[in-house]
Image (tube, rainbow, N blue to C red; front, side, top):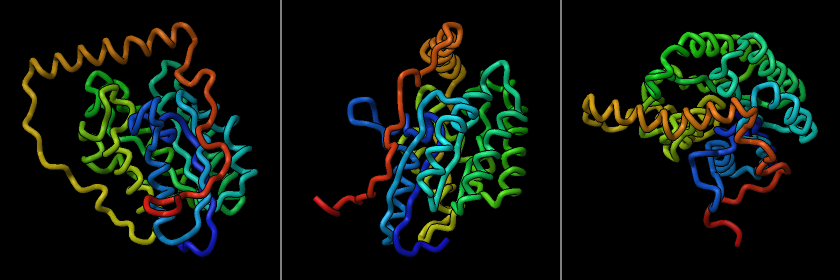
Length: 263
């Protein structure tokens, strides 16, 4: 990927692209898209970066709420990452969900953007109680790869690498990445895009951890049920979303300033 002159990067997606898990409500969220923007700027290019992602959004909402704005910004680089909020719901329609993603792929590449997306890792290795969803994840990944190939979209295929399911890369809710996880995703996308200086070191395994005992594993599952799955189900029953009333954190392209630059 050549980086000559000015560059505009626009990120579309849900909570993962917004950066949840990498920061907090007080200090703000960083996330893999911010980190990718910094990697682009580190090549010496002037990078203007917009992040249109909003937590809780379904793939259709990302398309209807974010795509038009993204196209108006005429990005040189764009990332599209959505679908997990659809995949974990009872009424999941794989064809419709990936269809929304493919529409975004087609529209963004159609205005000349270099586009990248991601696959999902093995959800059962992150949240064992989610094992019934594994066939959905495998099918989703296959469909995304096919759609991406049709439109020349780069795929950061995290699903193929064991490190993607290391629990140290995930927050306690098992849905959002930790800062280390966001850093790894940024590395994966940078490598998929061919950004100068990037490589496949993002996939290197972390030092091994001792295997947890049965009681500790059961206790962790019970905590997850109470602290995450239970509240999530309550929100669904009430028709609410974690993104209700929220807007994009960086709706307009702003220059990326690396540490040590500017004031």
